[in-house]
Image (cartoon, rainbow, N blue to C red; front, side, top):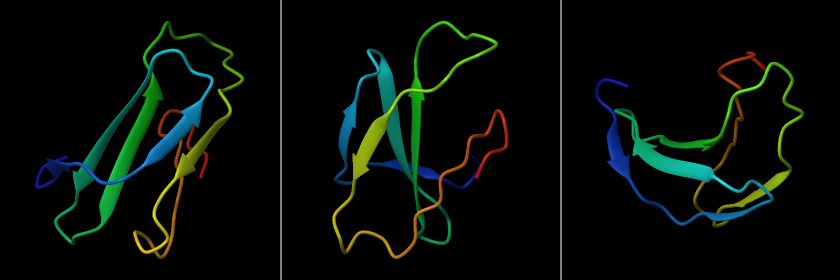
Length: 73
């Protein structure tokens, strides 16, 4: 995370997760990064939590979601 700066940008999060956390970052190339996770007890099998993330239409041209623990993209 070297060179990244914390930032806030408009995001609307709708989730059933009880302890969902999110943090925004600006990367050195001006791209934005939104980190989301459920801050709870880890489990070997976690089916996930349905969530809807809303971003302003002019806030992004492309969205990529990556599960850093399992490598899903």
